Image 1: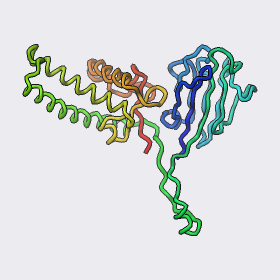
Image 2: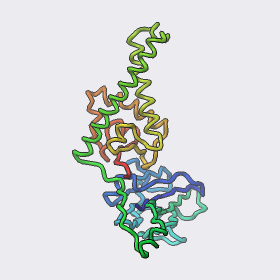
Image 3: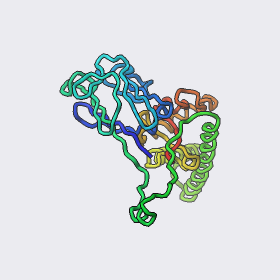
Length: 275
């Protein structure tokens, strides 16, 4: 499967690399780039317009299209309102690479499909067998996606309850000092600690998912489609408290990109994994 990446450089220094396949908008065919938080890729720099450009996806071909921005798009020193991207191509946002805050976007494509063994090709007379293609992350949405999130949440809840029960038994046996301040306090603190570490550690890991999400084929990404940091995953967990306080309404994916309230507050999204 072809993976599409966009690397962002500011003043010649690499800032981050975004896997475009992890963005929901990749599958709708149009990725917005700009300074506003509502864009799919946010470039919060003064030189960038509110919605500076769009990445139009046509199969495995991508075109970068200027949205009437002030500083335009430039390739090789020439202004180009529409650019057909090729792997390794660099596009400048701004008047000059030497301008303060100049931004360069570098596009790269990597084929991560397993390559056939040459010895197998020779044994088959130069013909390769048909290999099943790996599916990329599918666009989220609809009743199926909502059901997956609900089931993942139920699985994670049961796992956390099991871990919490074990932790609470350990606290009880060892006579941990929390009991000196009250039984109820020990229950609450143990539950919060277990939930926080379970969600934050797993969602900021290489899998980007709790066990429930892994089982349901889901993962968590940040606003740029990248792996969340431990800090961001922690904020997302504690934001769930607000989602729960309002009668659980915050757990409904009613915002843009099928986000829940705690997703929206932290800029995260839950998407289907690359299989």
